[in-house]
Amino acid sequence: ELVIDPHDSSLPVPRFTLCADLWVDPKGRLHLFHDQTMGGYYRSERYFLNQCTTSDSRRGVWHAVCENPDAETLVWSKPERIKVSHAPHGPTLLRDGSLFQIGREFRHEDVQGSNGVDYTVIRAEKSFDHGKTWQVLCEDIPDTDGENGVPHMFHEPNAVELADGTLVGMVRYHGAKGANATDGNGYLRETVSKDGGKTWTPMAATPMLGLPPHLFTLPDGKLVCVYGRRN
Image 1 (tube, rainbow, N blue to C red):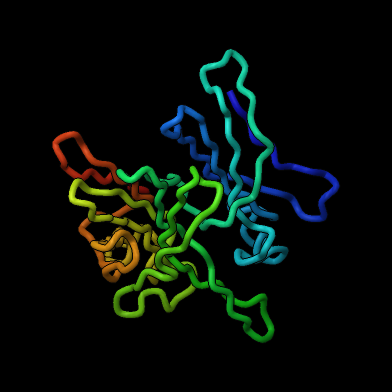
Image 2: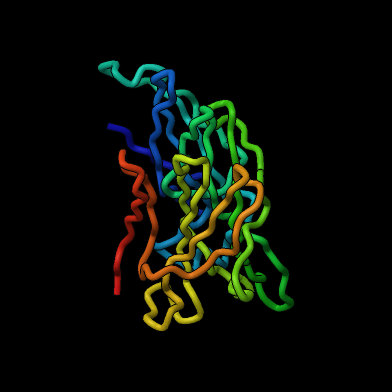
């Protein structure tokens, strides 16, 4: 049992954590990744935006390691902030032993008379040292027809490697009328890379309406996408 308690009464703004993900590396060590920010996402969105924008440097991803997850009492390393974008389902282990993910970041633009706006950026990243450091393969996976020209459109991406090395990514898309719209705006967006994550096809609409996506492959090679329906 593990509880992550980010609260600190000495801070001027509440601290908030979410989207923890566990992963066991080839050496049997248990890794924990989680997102943390000043403010809060769900409890008070208005308060969060007024006190700390989503592009604020106080938001980031943290990483801790348990060397012996089979022990009666788990001992974790001191959590360290790592330079990687947010991916709620965590990284995928590739056949070459590296970790890979597509994650979400924000591009902030100042707007006179307001706190500015944050546009989402979906990028591809890879780690060769079990998540300690990350290399950006693609800075900004392209959208389709300017869909990313509206703030906060793409979220909660996930990717998986197919048997032939192809990388397939799926992304939550809010659209102009919300994530659960039935006019085509709430459908998951798909993107594909044939060169190990360096370049990607534009994120395109799929027939799947819902969020968030989670991809995995079956032993027979079939690709499965699990997602929620909230409308």
